[in-house]
Length: 423
Ligand code: NAD
Image: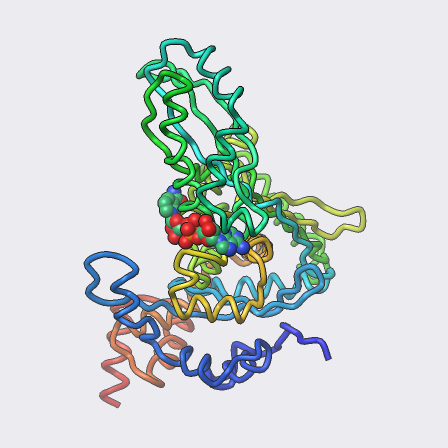
């Protein structure tokens, strides 16, 4: 029987039973399960080699979003983050998308752009012609640095030259286009760019300064779309509300910043769980949103289908990898990749894009209907109760009381805790 990510009531199960379901879905071993249950799963000896000046580790909750069906395949999606209601919202939107057949996602090849800045040029036109005339040698030289990438079918594919006017005079900027396959690619691309320095200086008679990849990975995009049936959204009015919320974001950067932040709530949580460089993706996503059509725009797009349902889509640069970076060193990141069952960086990008769309749909639906505070505060109330010192059963009792009173506040949680303990 095909495995299903639609597990009704997953959120109501105790942690142990959730883990049992996950174990069966993702064929986890007892060792994997033991790792999930270890809140200090990142060993100090590994942590100490990951960054500098290590004094500890910083655990985050790892949740599982249910209901995702992408390109006909079911996924349970690991999400690591501190914010309540994100995992629930993603699961809920994925359930609605599932009723419309699930997500369809694609991704481009893993082309990253490496930049080489050339300044102090005596003759810009000649320099540009010299670089383009030696394009093949430069590409071959870059590829000689990374036989493993070339063997995996990737490597430098093209070289472009741009001319920039800057406050420090005119410059040439070379763009080395590198197919990074299953790597995020920053190290691979930076190494290639650094290697080209002597030849570029010789060809241009200029001086090379910066050699580093661009996080505006506009050639490495993922696209996802889904039809959200109006019946599952709450009728025609609900579709209207979402379209108006979308129109608001398109017309106003103040709203659009928050709209795109909501998308990244989902994308980042998947990226953190799988050990990706989420800052790289954040930088790329927002710059893409700002440069694609001029002003800062939504990363998602919505329209009504002829039948009155809602079609949503998302497109954003997604530089992710399964080779290199933390994904290979962090045991929980490896486990998240196993849970997802993704085999390529492209597939991971498709999942992350689908989660971004689901997250955005859920936010727009909640905002245009009851507002997000009701659902959010219910979940947030537990955090407030914990912060006030509640333990075990006390957490839910105090949270429920605060929600019922519509007074989800730290001081109220303290009062309730004192009363409860006195009783
Ligand atoms: P990496 O160098 O560890 O791994 C990539 C290498 O793996 C390739 O160069 C290739 O030699 C090899 N490889 C083997 N099989 C492969 C396959 N199937 N597909 C692709 N490569 C294969 O890591 P990376 O991905 O080059 O760099 C990622 C790291 O760089 C991240 O940790 C990121 O945080 C960091 N970083 C980011 C920036 C930035 O975003 N601006 C800058 C510097 C460093």
